[in-house]
Image 1 (cartoon, rainbow, N blue to C red):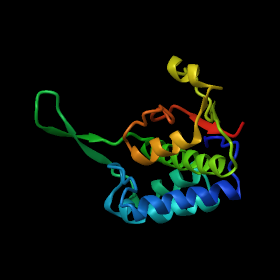
Image 2: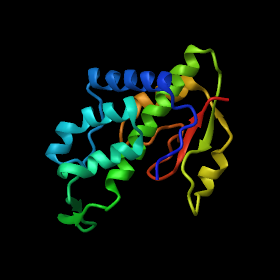
Image 3: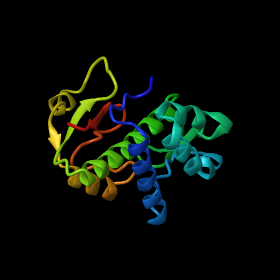
Length: 178
């Protein structure tokens, strides 16, 4: 099920694309360890296509095709050494939701800054059966677009952002214009 992005329109998409190009030019485009060699080669173009005319769901579908997601990954054992573990079946969805949402938030933050809007509002973009209490407490609170943009730019990929939005895999939190 795709995330619901309240302000996803052509203007926001253009700013999302600018943010992706910013990451590419600064050599910080997040390449997930779930991606196969083929997935790593195709990722930037798949993400670009989703930003231009799709969403997290279309990105996930593209990642599932042509063996772009690894079937197994090495996993560090608690007592030392490594073993091989199966990749989660929803790896493509988790990756697509997380990365598309990050670029959506960054694009919307840029839009708010350009329009002189001082706050973005956190909302639930994905309904969840058992929401985390800490996530629920954030809904309908506001964040500075400038601080949010700087936070996400400085914490690419799997690094948790300092401001906590997005708040991790499957959180379903995003932001909207007031």
